[in-house]
Image 1 (spheres, one colour):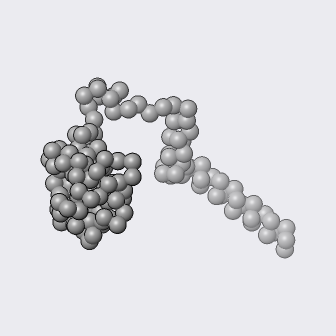
Image 2 (image 1 turned 60 degrees about the horizontal axis):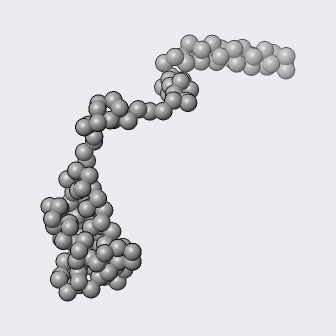
Image 3 (image 1 turned 90 degrees about the vertical axis):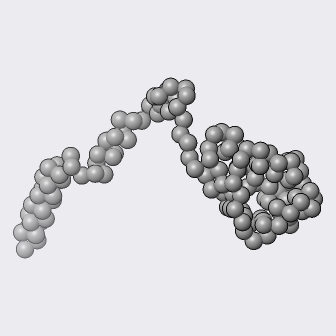
Length: 136
């Protein structure tokens, strides 16, 4: 009986190997692994190399923040990031909620000074200058 079982198991293994060899070219995982193997050691070309220096991807950016004056550095990050994206040519919007809404009041903006960054009133002035939309 064990002799019969072994021969049946071998037949199944052989059948599976034949099926896999037939289906392998159409199996998506195989295609991806072959593509990955071919791509090893090569560096992807950047957009500027493919389309010229003037070509770059532009994304619409929405930045959400709820950080208020209790943590000045985190409160300023939404405006700092928006400024960086706007200067890079991306259309940016800021959505403020919770305690972050209070940052729009002049006395609060004057009092918030993030660690290692200019005062929020200066950052906020640059944000307005860049035309960033602010939603509350």
